[in-house]
Length: 372
Image (tube, rainbow, N blue to C red):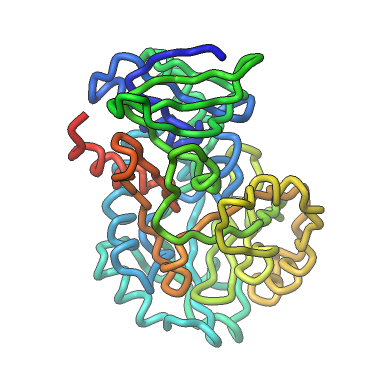
C-alpha cells in the first residue's frame, strides 16, 4: 500500500468539497490539501443533477431561518460566481387556490419580512396559468446556475491553490494513527490501495456520509435518502424565458437548466421515486445504480398542465436521476440547514452536508471559527 502525508483530506469532489478545499488552501494556509473524488470528474453528481436554483428565500415560507439565510446568501453567491449565474429569465411564484399551505396574502407578507423582492405579475404572465386553480402570481428575483461553469471555476481555483485532486479515488475508512495525533484515510486508489496520513478530514460525500468505516463513528444526525427524478424539457416559446414555482405543498417547479439549454421539471409527488432512512449497511449510490430509472414525466406533465396549460406543448428530452439527502428533522417544515458535525471521537474529522448551493457560506462561517 502506498503512503502519503497531507495537512487535510477532503472526501467528495462536489461543489462543497471543492469550495472547502480551496478555502483551506487559500484562506487558512494549509500547505498540502488533497481532494478525493470517486468519479472521473468534479461536480458530476448532486452538484449537477438538481434544479440549479440559486435560492433567494421564496421557496421556504414554512422555515423562516432557511428563507432568511438564503436571502442573505443570494447576493453573495451572485457576486462571487457571476460567470455561473443565469438571470436572463423571469421567475414566477404562483399560489395555488386549493390545498396550498400558504395563501397569496401570507406569501406576500413573508417575502416582505425576509426582505425579498416581490411584485404582482403582469397580466400577460398571469394569463399563462389557469385562474380557476391559481389564487395569484408574483414576479420575484431568483436565478439559476450553470454547473459546468462552476466546475470550470473549481478546476482553475484548485490548480491555482495547489490542491492535489485525485479522481476515481474512493475513501474507504478513516482511522486514528497509533500516536492519536493524526488521522489515516484509507482509499482504493493504486494497485494495492493508498493511505494518507493527515491532521484533518472533511467528509463531504453528501448521500455517502455514513459510508466511511474504520474508526469513523458515523454522523449523529438522522438523514433520509430518496431517488429523485429531474425531468429535462424543451419548453414551448411562451415558457422559454420563464421559471415557475407553484406553491406550497404537493405542487411543482420548472426552471431553466443552463448547462443543457433546457428546462427542468420537478413535482413534489412524482420527483421522489422512493425513499429510505439512512443505514450504514446500505450504500445509497448502489441503490441508485440498481434502480431501473423509469421516468414519471407523463404524470408530471399531466398534473402540471392543469395549472400551466402551455407545458403540454413541451418536448421531453431526458431525466436526471440522483440520490437526494435531507435531514429527517426537517421533513415536515421544508427547512434546509447545513449539517456540520465535529466528530469528538475522531478529533480533526468533520462531516458536512448542505441542502442548497448557497449554504456554502454557512459552512465557511463555521470553518472560520475552527482553529486550523
